[in-house]
Image (cartoon, rainbow, N blue to C red; front, side):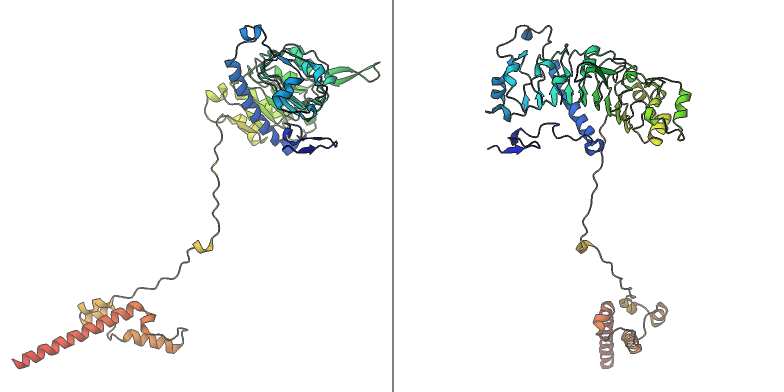
Amino acid sequence: MSTLYKTGDGECHLSNCFPVPGFFRHRQDGAGHWFVAHREQMEQRNRNIRRTKNNRPDHSTGSDFATPAAGNTLDGSLLIRLHGVENPSDLCSIDISEQRLTSVKNEDFKEFDSIVYINASDNSLSIESFRSFGLLRELDLSLNGCCDMSFHPEDFPHLEVLDLSFNNVSEADIVCIGRLAGLKVLCLTGNRLHQLPANMAGSNPSPTLSGSSSEEKPLFGSLEVLSLDDNQLTSNVFHSLSSLTRLQHLNLQSNNISEVPFMLPDGDGAHTGSNQGHFWGILQPSVGAVESSLPLPQLQFLSLAHNKIAEEEALLSAALFPSLTELVIHNNPLTTQRTGDPPLLTYLLSVRRGVRVKRSDRAEVRNPSVMLPDRFKHKIRSEGRMAKRPWLTEQSHYSPQERERQGFPKDPSSFQAKEREKNDMGDGVTDRPDETKHPEESFFVTKEVKMQGEMAEGNNRNNTVRNLL
């Protein structure tokens, strides 16, 4: 039985519809750790999308899409049937992927007033098809063949995550997407992009409430994560992205990038190329006032894997990104045709800036730490070993002179006499039987006395026999 979940505004919803991905995400949750989890999720999903794209027919030539099948319209009854709910207001996230949808009935979505997440991948829909969901926060439109981005940004006031992977997004469409004021995560993987708008953070004229004047707002003013992997972009892409002041995660994997150009602010606030001498001057510790005007001031992660970077000098300008913490450069000519760490790049980024440069795509294997519990009963307590005494059994094989030279006592009871003297002198050793003082001495002394007694009896017996003869 489903229980009710009460949100902050006092409304109750079914608990089995929560948590919606990204609905309770904080702005700076974990000081950047959520970027790592989000990156792994995006990479895994992109691999699944590529696998699906290779196994499905083309949108333009496939016969399956030439004649739409029955039931390819998204309406309210389809949503209720797919998710098994009775009240449309109880539905918070919907999954309509791989349904071959080509059109929608927006008049049926008025009662679905709690939708915040939609997965519409592998269909033939556009952003405008979901204008009726006013609370929408995350929208996945990958593999939809989107080529028309004509929509009204005011219809999506809460949209934060937009996935347009493997579509036909153009340069003009990117400008339309930039008008989404609350957009934080944008994925444009596999769109065959050759270039981006000249200034992605340019002004966005939008009408004011009165309608008589216009207010200019920057494009992509809230963008934090941007995925442009698997495209055909060149090194000029950095000039288009340099003005994104909120960008923290940038993925440029699998492009045609050969270098990171030197970008310094000019008089108009834009970033243009500069010579390397000026670059070394900015890196001096005394010059710290220019950090606020450096390109991509909040960029923390940059992936340039699977590109065409051949020289380490082509990556030196990455040191101008003041917040950079990780740089991925594996599967470049710089790493595949050379061995070892590039010295200049290692000193400038790793040693001086503390940037983690990842040169290999292999996962790091860390040996788990083994902690042994403190168990006192397993500890070995060492005790002083008793000094060994000379073997007294050997005395019978030596003559008296030899026995004296070897240090054997003349009298078998001399050991007992010495112990009595120690006890009389008060050396702290209590009087105890000789057997418990030195077990080895007591055993061998007793054996020697017995042997001497037997020898004496044998001599007496021999003397008696000799006398009788």
